[in-house]
Each structure stands twice: as C-alpha cells, then as structure tokens.
Length: 335
Image (cartoon, rainbow, N blue to C red; front, side):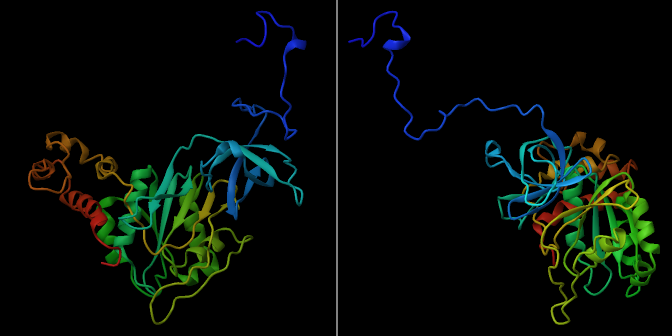
C-alpha cells in the first residue's frame, strides 16, 4: 500500500529527524583542488612534519586516506593551517604518485614489506671497514633492493684509518658501483664530507647501513647545522647501538640535494623482491637472457647466460656478481 500519492507535495513528505544532529553521510569526497604541495621530512607518533614552501608544517593524515601509508620523501597535498605556527595542525589529503619506492622486509620469510623512503634517486650504502667488520651480504642485499627500486647505488666506506678498502672494493669492481672512501680524520676536517657531497648534488639520497658504521656521524658532517645523536660499537658483540630511531630528510647546505638519514638496520629482508627484475640492472647481460628457458633463475645449468659470456659478449665477473646478488636472498646477512 502506497503511503503517498503519485505526485506528493513537499508538505506531504515525512522526514525523520537526524537524532545525532549532524549532517548525513555521503560518499562524495572533496577534491581539494586548492591543496598546497608539501614534502614529508619526518614522522613522529602520527604527526608528519612537511616542508610547505619554505615553512615546516606539522600535519596528520586525513581520514579519507584510510590505510594508505605516508613515508619520508613523499610529496603530498596539504590543506588547513599552513602557517607553521606552534600548536597548529594541517591535514594531508592526498599522496602524489611516487617516482621510486625503497622497500625491505624484516627477513626473507616476512610477507609484510616496509617502505623505507619514497622518491629517492640514490641509495648510499654506508659500511665501516672495521669496528664493526664489514658485512658483504648485507651490502649485496641493499644493492638488490636499490636495483629493484630503480635507485643508483653508492658505496660509502668509513673508518679507512682502521683497515684498507682494497679487498672490499675488489669484490664490487665488476658491478661498476660508484664509491667514496672516508676516514675519521677526514670527516673531522671536512675533506671527506666535500667528496661525498659531490656525489649527492641534485639528488635525493637515502642513507642505509647497520648500526655503528658511522652513518649518522657522516650525515652530521654533511649537514653541520642539524646534529643527530650518535652512538658507539659494543666491544663485546661488535655491533652498534640504534641511535637514529626515525627517518629524517635534510637539505644539503648548498641547496642542491637532500639527504635522508634512516635508522640503522640489522637485517634487510628481500621477500618482496622478484629476482627476475634484478637482471635489468645488468644491461650488458640482459640480451643474453633471450635464449633462457621460461622462468629461468639465471643460476641453473641450462641458463643461456653461460654461453653468452663464453662467447665473449660480457665479462665473466659480471655474471658472477649477478649470481652472487641473486643468491643472497637464500643466505643470511652474517654468512
């Protein structure tokens, strides 16, 4: 039975009052076309510090972002109070498309990937030559993650006053990775910092390394006006203590690049890496994979790369380096 006629007037319609006194829900979301672009510098307990124009603005994620994560390096759309004044809070309403994403997992069995930084151009892998001893497998894992993310790797070797870099550099020579060697004395007088800055110009560079290698000390030398706490290496375990607890983006003094200091890591899981993508970082070997069987891991008896290298199309050391990187996912970092 119809309650109203065919053409009821507005007065004939009974509207139930909204008991909560608020506006009814809608699926239509604002487009925020007037939002201002910001660059995420750091995150602390749900509060995100963003660079908006020349001001630092504290913001929080808007509800419409849902579970979408925001990380250091993200370019975001910000609305609300953008004055940067004390006790003001803006809202991040949109995360712009990322040009690159550096990820890792806790270990190779962990299905949950963690985004380390976004929109970086370069990955600086910092390792000490002694105190603590270098861990080549961790370096290999960082290289694989860099190649997968499309970042250019840079090796930064510290504490050369304690040990020679020659042996370590020899093992990475075939990869053609750029490197910088520093010592504690050179960091103190500024010479090493200048050499590293030359490699960072006009780039956004993420710094990674396990605890105690001098990563934050190096960052402090690169950006002297923003000193972060540093720690020491445990004499018994040979491991460093975590002093950097959150990622932080810092502008270089010259204004021509950014450094993103990340917390020290003790492992770099590669569960999220598709091994088939690693070959793209070896353009001299990639044509040789055309004759490989389907789903070839490039580390098996019938891999076409063996014949490709034997015929003189590429350096055998390059193939060895590729296979070493591919196998690192099955090996623990300390091996």
